[in-house]
Length: 264
Image 1 (spheres, rainbow, N blue to C red):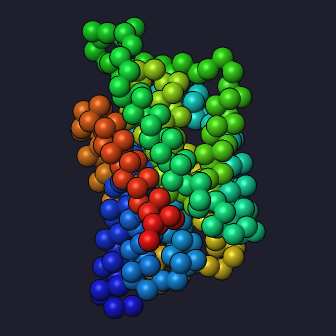
Image 2 (image 1 turned 135 degrees about the vertical axis):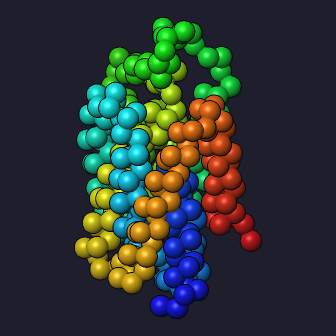
Image 3 (image 1 turned 90 degrees about the vertical axis):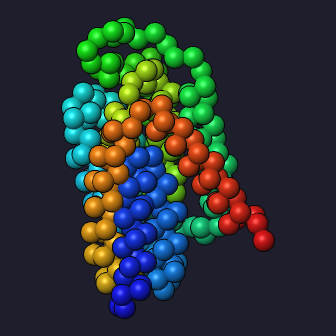
């Protein structure tokens, strides 16, 4: 592989890792970069899924301080994420992708609008107001956890199928019941669940023999570096600014997906 193609793969994966650490949506950077580097679409999709899985784990490690308070929420969402990733991967292997692609712009838009609503609504008074650790609020899990289970399962099915914008969808879902919990804690949970879903998809692609053996280690190393840098930078930014960045990214992803599907 020549240096130009390697640089395309590494650059796209590094930026994708950083974006996923902040909000999600990095697939729409690394996937086109892999196509531009000469990989066929199936190999690009498969290689991208495998390469970004370690990056998600690296990002989760960077959020280990926030995650230490949220094992209960992870326990609730772990199983639907695993099951959804399995179902989504199976659907990808047995059904035409165009059937699901038609719904993708709408799904990402709905998720983004949910997060926008979360940004615009008045902040709830925190029981920890004035405390030394304003990020220590507890998640208020819904009285009907099966609703969250089902929604996370559906999001994970989408993630196992393609995955662009899955981080935005999970942030929107978590925000809907998280109250005033710091978005950096939400990012930590999101990265753990994304690594699980991506891992299931990666295994499916490996089983199908669709992964490019040369491009994978290049993208994997670059994505890990990008995800670690993105997580460190994101934690230093004011939480509300991160939320607005997520909303802007979601609207951009929606426009890109809609154009790819319905544009000229």
